[in-house]
Image 1 (cartoon, helix red, strand yellow):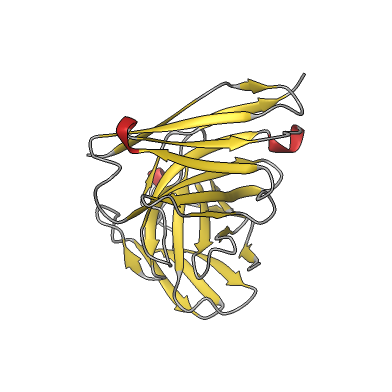
Image 2 (cartoon, each protein chain N blue to C red):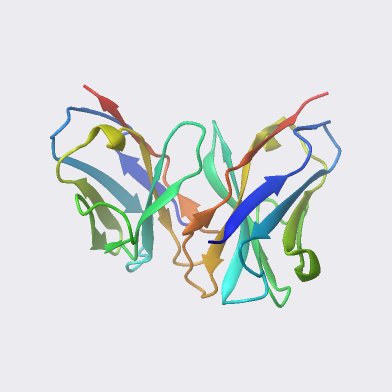
Length: 121
Length: 108
């Protein structure tokens, strides 16, 4: 069955850029009608939707993060990625990639295991 | 943004108890609500979508109800594996989608 796996640095310095990749295995990122999403979890704000991308490249971003984030998709590698610029300690979180159905109303049946990213000098 | 609240924040219960968790939305979300279970160090697991649709493989002791702004998750007979934190999530509109703060179900 389809599985998701996050990867990337566990430690990022303040003001630098956080970059994470989600690798899809057991199926093609091109197939089906899905949104490929990033969700993060902090002790302070709980679970927060960061953004999502459709296979055609269209994106939806959390307005509170929109000026700093880019989500991209690489079908040839069966991956999608998150870039978050100018990070601060408030961006310290467990970051999950997730797959949602490709409709305007979409929940999350499938999640990666999550990766902890700490922002600290 | 649509704000989600949950009550209680912590619930102490015993095996076999009937447990109900409430989730409220700051505006109507029709039935666009999901429930997840999360255990420490693990990703959330989808239990219910569209307020009351039980996900395949989820035990039938879990049920969901509600529409508009008021929703409930009920566990009819609490089992040892059910001690966890439960989250509701609205997906009415990506403004963005938002989660409740969680309800921790702990052993009494």
